[in-house]
Image 1 (cartoon, rainbow, N blue to C red):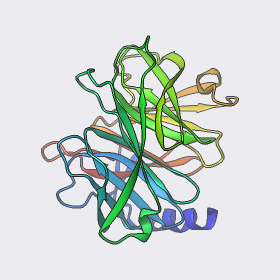
Image 2 (image 1 turned 90 degrees about the horizontal axis):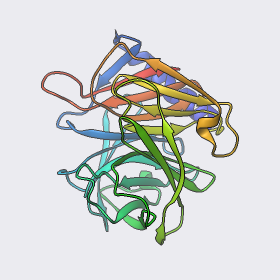
Image 3 (image 1 turned 180 degrees about the vertical axis):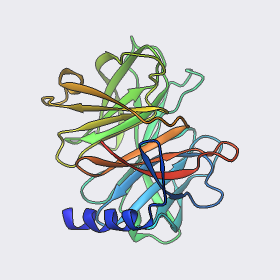
Length: 268
């Protein structure tokens, strides 16, 4: 797995073109992909996966090691109510987080499991992990999650006090568990994407202008360890983040006019 990660990293290093603050601007996202809302990497296939959010088709895009479009898959058995983030497991299965809730009026949320999409050509089938919030929790907007020890950890998008919930990685219906309420110091603290390193020791939470690096935690007490804030010196609508090695991530942002719509590399 490390060898595969090194290979894809080398591809990205070779095509790096310019610096944007602390971000290395690798390449433009494929033409027409204006609302990239998530980013994931499956080492088995050496592919990056991208989705677009509400108002776009049920489509899973695969990018190769040069950031070029490799395949476009229609996801059967899924509805893009508001797709916001991606996760994957060691077998190369990809999970689509359909839990965006800008109006804060949704009662039902889904995570779609797509089995080994890297093997498919034009279509792929989804199974549904459906969940509701606990009865005493108000409806919230969620945009970020990752898979850790066979549970999904999902983060609300709030400027003040955020909430992290968890859901089991099991097909069917369930009620989410509230894990913790958290407060990220400072302004503009809405979490738009998240990931955890392959060794399970580092969590990153993405924001338009910064990333939070969480380390030295035990089990799933992610906020009880060290929380480091790293600014980008570059403000755009960043919506996707994924580890490609322990201290290096890739990031995507949405296109707004002539700005954004790029794939970046960032060293933590």
